[in-house]
Amino acid sequence: MKIIDAADLEAIALGGAVYGTGGGGDPYIGKLLAQNAIRKSGSVHLIDVESLADDALVFEVGGIGAPTIVIERLASLAPLLNAVEALETHLGRRVTALMSGEAGGLNSTIPFAAASALGLPLLDGDPIGRAFPELQMSLCTLQGIAASPLALADEKGNSVIIDAHNNATAERFARSITIDMGGSVFGALYPMSGAQVKKALIRGSISRLLDAGYALFNARAKHADPVQALLQASGGRLLHAGKVTSVERATGGGFVRGHADIEGLDGYAGGCLRLSFQNEFLLARRGDRVLASTPDLICAVDSETGEPITNEKMRFGLRVAVLGIPCDAAWRSDAGLALAGPRYFGHDVDFVPVELSR
Picture (cartoon, rainbow, N blue to C red):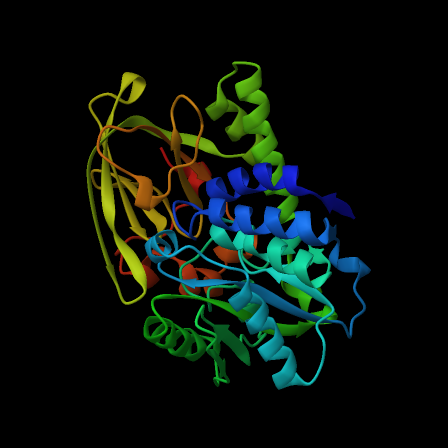
């Protein structure tokens, strides 16, 4: 068990922005909520799943919707707590522990706010190992664990329970209701037993965010290369480095979609990398050659500071380094690629493991 205090949230938010792969919402907002909750209600116990009884009840908690809307309309803790209460009431049972639905983006920090405010432990792990744009994109789905019943709540005090027959339908209903609620809501979902969590959880993924954040902080303090420090901490590889020359993005249907072009500099001069995204960076292509694709992680950071760059912060003139990090092995199965591989997102390319790309 680790005790997470307000200072640790700085590192978790930084690591969460890296593993958010350009999407998932800005962890900074969740960090502020979590730090405020910890100062009022105390530190969060980050626990290993093995400490849970098999009949324990666990909820994922986090945000759903377009990240740009979260930035424009600052989040508050009340709807998150309302979502937890609504799902507990529906199930007629109190939750034992909370879990992050994504080890990246806003949903890597938001659960700390709920855990602190409710005095509940948070599991050191998640069922994705990164951020993904749709709620059925989870190893829970591969394990046959239902996303619903789930609760959504907005800042006006509205709450909705969804009980869908499969996780893809739950995503479609949740996305539609999220748009009706203003484009961004909080939710409590994937209610599951301790035994189910032990099958689906990617263990230690929250600790990896903490380690990545502190690796960047230490590199900056020692005036070392932050990009190299991040590569060592994550086990990733450098795909490209250059200057952003154009960005196109549009918000619709509860997502932010678009692409960014990065002209190579130094050792990458003469080449242009295109990053395509649907909230998260999903495809990195130089010409016709795919360098990395979902479900592997594609991360963009400032070349000098190592600061993660989300798709909504990508702009002309930024000097960026693009990293590729291998995903959890379960995502590379046929079922995993069908759920979150490049073809699911409309890219007519085969998945190539990032460690094999040239």
